[in-house]
Image (cartoon, rainbow over all chains, first blue to last red; front, side, top):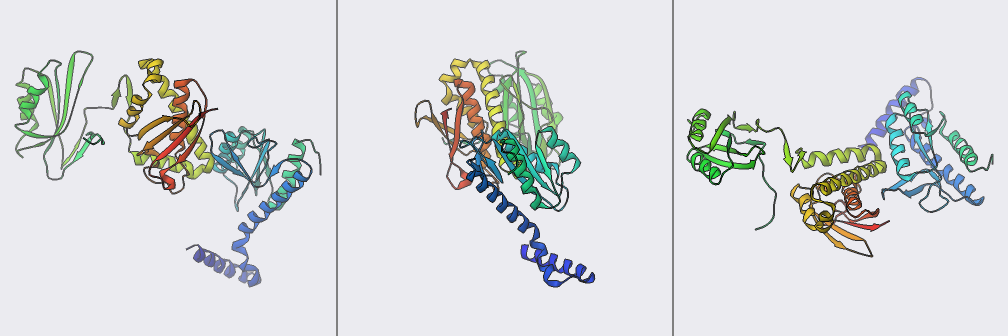
Length: 168
Length: 257
């Protein structure tokens, strides 16, 4: 069923873009683009964590943290000076349209259970108006960019500033 | 006799049958109930009945029944019941097209507390939806709600029967949860000092659904909240066995934080 949908998506996009004169080889990559972005972003957080560990700061990417409730939560990146005690947690929400308030709520309930000093949500392309209001209310730091890859240095800057490292 | 589920009758469906809901206010005196039963059994087959006393010294008999004769009317049944000296008032509600609904009662009272009745499966699917929408955060939210309800219920029980009695009769009070359909709890001490292990058979939280949930977080929270209110100690908890993970029952370990 999933394969059928991908093929259908390719076919529709191919038809539309061929009308505009795009290359068919380029078209085959289109349905895989969001997945590739997630994998790439994840990989960059791992690089960021390695760099911080090299500088003596205990960072994890991805980070599995057991909250006060005993439930295990996963974040894209976290600083954990002690096991189970998060200083900062970072998550990503990538979407083709504005990210809605449910994604903010989903992040917030994890944050509430883990209780870090700072919570950062990296969003691409951006939060919807209601989601933005909710994030502000919950004290979540939101980083937005239309290009997901640009979110990594933005997150790194926020994390570095928070732990007093300044720019790399 | 094997333990089992209590049948109650807020609704009954029996296609082709003439159904009546008989509600009688009677004097709360010995023999009143049996005198009403002796009268109605000649005209109806009782499917399910309940009786309870009221603070004004009267009692209520409520029964769902099938007419033995299709010609029997509610009015006739009322007149028959009122021929008993034990009856103070009688109301007979007739079903329609084989469907009978209790239109007399407006809820449930246990002790002094009002209760609502809800389908087990319906509540489980609410939990499932919370978990689906909010992921692992939904699980922790359910845990927190369980803690809050466990605390509140245990505090309510302490007010009703006394904190000392709640601590001394934990085993008996666990049967109160079983009677409400939450699951059959078996608690034992250990492992370790101040810790205990609770096995829950027929745990309501994992009795259906479960495609996306990772455990019985509400029940775990409820036990933590109940234990905290009862013993005045904070507990760490984990679910060591769960039906959702293929076990034949759920098991929770609680140890002082």
